[in-house]
Image: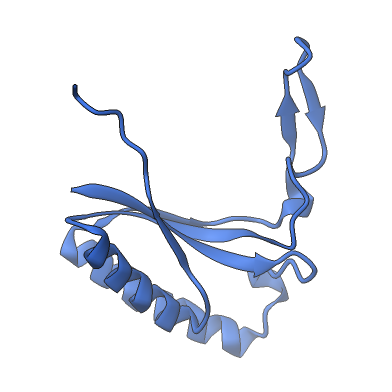
Length: 122
């Protein structure tokens, strides 16, 4: 079994949050994601899921100079950012892609999927 990270990209210019969404759209999105999460959980594939606040709320801790500095900024400026994610464990990439299709369908948008690197037993 391999672990996969499914990420929900957002446009950095918009920085949407649940508080800024249209209430009807939010309700529909939460219902669709709730159904998706229930299916993931029922299958045993769901390890963890969550939504993130936008980069403007981020703090970056930098110890590269030997002294800790806490910066009120994301570690990188980018045109898009991860707004939410799922961590799943499934048999193979094909199964991960199938779950990703279902996630993208629930959110009517794009979802990225990547396998987690794992240390080999060798």
